[in-house]
Length: 170
Image (tube, rainbow, N blue to C red; front, side):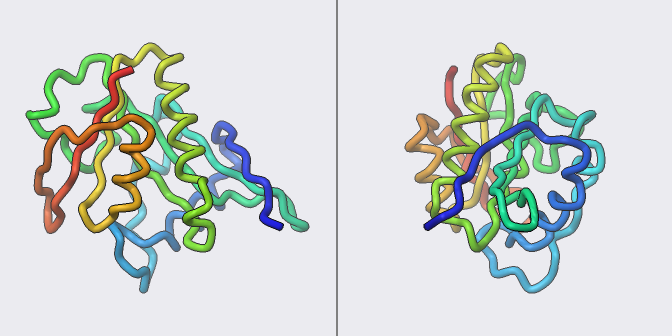
């Protein structure tokens, strides 16, 4: 029987588990051979994100964080990847970022649970739309976002990556 997963808001005490999750989650569809570079934005989650959620499961040793997702105001300093011009006006636009699901928990609906929570939270916060980017090497991520109502807005390049930008009007 699979453990029950729920989503809740981030708490400062979650920091060590968020780092552990981030460090062992491969970047852009790659195989993890070492931890990803730690993003500065995650040093101050409360200050850098409009909202940040964690997916949790109860274990015999306590609560385990098995997924995470943050929403920022698009164009904020927390962004690593700049939003391309074709996305248009960023006023009242939320951006989903730092989506991670533990490798051993992928393909179990945790990404969908987090995405649906972010959509509901963005509506409640008064955003007019949400944007998210991923890479073509992550067809499961693209399919997830499209199945929750996002549509491709265009593609851009950043460093060595081609990015697929998706948007959802709220």
